[in-house]
Image (cartoon, rainbow, N blue to C red; front, side, top):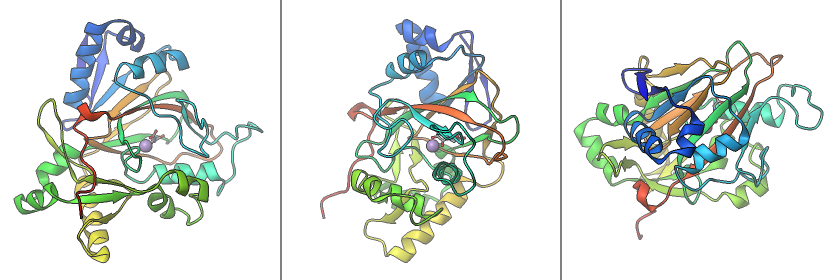
Length: 291
Ligand code: OGA
Ligand code: MN
């Protein structure tokens, strides 16, 4: 197995082993797991990907999430991100729910921070790519943490923030999160510094989903969240992934932010994500402290 760095701050391509090899061999899994802990984003190219291989690979890393209520793939391990209408197979028009969801994915975020158990990792495979636009971008939240002042690091180490699906969807359209989604996904509260249990490295844990901070006035909290997102996404720090057929990306949701990029609405894009839940071994950032 060889590795090639994708960006000075984040990411490595894994060369010489396939995802099926990882699923089948514990030594290969351990090497890839170490690369995941180190680089936060892993790229596999030219994979003969199937749903079965994606699940077998992802399951090595931990328990899989089931796709959210009211999403394409609900109740299965597959979250489907697409502009193809599942019933008519036509491309969805602007303003369609899947179009608005794609727009919400274009806000910098980390996956499932609003769940009762956040996501350790996401595995996204390209099934149909638009040939133009539709890139996925990543920043290292370890690098972001390191750019904060000592005083801010000290403060955020003991701050707990609320993450809500309705909050991020509301930035796109106030009706995008339905009542069923709101009922099944109540907000969750996590420490704003996530320390990796394997290497002790700290990461800033915020997202488009973050809408409040314990003990901080709401107006001030929103301002601080915006300032932190601006620091994380300062120009020059992002790795932009230009998808090719057969590409699969995996990322560490504890230590990175990502966002999709727009693509022309007349071009189909079909991506399948499997998502690995945190367990207590993943340095889970801790729930809201007692009041
Ligand atoms: C995701 C996501 C962005 C994209 O799969 O979690 O945010 O480019 N994807 O599709
Ligand atoms: Mn995402």
